[in-house]
Amino acid sequence: MMRLPKFSYRVPRKIVETVKIMADVGPEGQFVAGGTDLYPNMKRRQQTPRTVISVMRLPELNQISGDGKSGINIGASITLTDICDHPLINQDYPVISQAARTISTPILRNMGTIGGNLLLDTRCNYYDQNYEWRKGINFCLKKDGDICWVAPGSSKCWAVQSSDLVPVMVAIGAKLRFASTLGERVIDAAGLYNDDGIDYLHKRPDELLVDIQLPPTNGWRASYRKLRRRGAFDFPVLGVAAFVKTSTSGTVEHARVVLGGIAPAPIEVLEAGRQLIGQALTEERIQAAAEAAYVKARPLDNTDFVNNWRKQMTREYTIRALTDLKSVC
Ligand SMILES: Cc1cc2nc3c(=O)[nH]c(=O)nc-3n(C[C@H](O)[C@H](O)[C@H](O)COP(=O)(O)OP(=O)(O)OC[C@H]3O[C@@H](n4cnc5c(N)ncnc54)[C@H](O)[C@@H]3O)c2cc1C
Ligand code: SF4
Image (cartoon, rainbow, N blue to C red; front, side):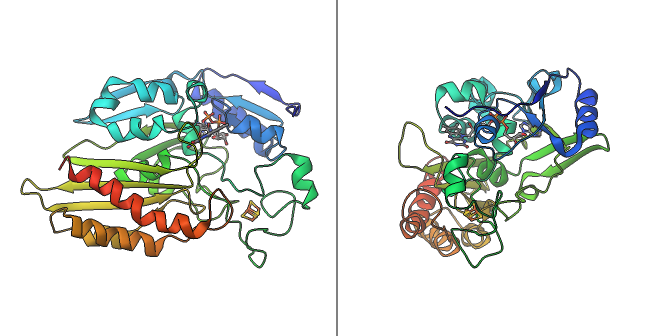
């Protein structure tokens, strides 16, 4: 049985107290929400904070406010189950609950939060193993080693951004609000992720995610399609989020296709958007956008399934995600 290392556990009730504790403990500290990612990582000695600071008792992080007309703010500690069940999110942002329902299992969704999901550690077959397994291969660049087993000539880690909600948040243009002792900042979801499996977030470790701000639903539609081995639960080995806003005549005015689960950061396929904008969402345009997504996708051999097949599936899953939108445009 894998055991957690020793750590001290703090449960602050105010944001100002939370960020102060983090500033005081420095690099030895880490926030925890549901712990469904952090605690397994600690058991595997991938992350070893000496002080763990719970964000579950902070009122601002446990509320949902607003509506589709003005945009909804979702506190970072809202559980995935609450996201799936929330009437307004289901009604106005069905793509969010659709993607959240595909995450792990009902039990894990009762614990796991939207904030934890958006800040998930990157994943790799050579990394998501217990300490002894990793020691057996002399570790790897991401933790304790000096080689990447996926791309041995590479000085970069290619561990994969494997959250289901990340490509969706990027596609719909969500914003994220962070707090620290230095103050607050709000950034676009697209600006948070870095294409490096080790340094995967454009965020300082002391920054607390407070809430996620969804844009007003002024006529746009979005869809998410996920490739995984088991339908019951599995991380995505490819996720495609598609976003389209059409004019009253049916012409596409804005479009985004974002790929998840194949690189250290989500990938917006700009060419796919270009193939759609200014035209009706026809099968021909969808095929052209899907081809652009296929060309852009370069999955590596560090998760489930053969990478060339995952690349082929990018075309198919982009078609499916965009066709979902065709039926509602
Ligand atoms: C068996 C299994 C299957 C899974 N399947 C999926 C899947 O299919 N799809 C998927 O997307 N995920 C999956 N997950 C991952 C995980 O369960 C979810 O992503 C979950 O939403 C993580 O949320 P959490 O609250 O448990 O995160 P935690 O483990 O609490 O935290 C995750 C990270 O976020 C940081 N953090 C959390 N909250 C904050 C905050 N407010 N501010 C700053 N930092 C914060 C933590 O420090 C940590 O680094 C799976 C996990 C398991 C164990
Ligand atoms: S991509 Fe390479 S460095 Fe990164 S976790 Fe996998 S084996 Fe390690």
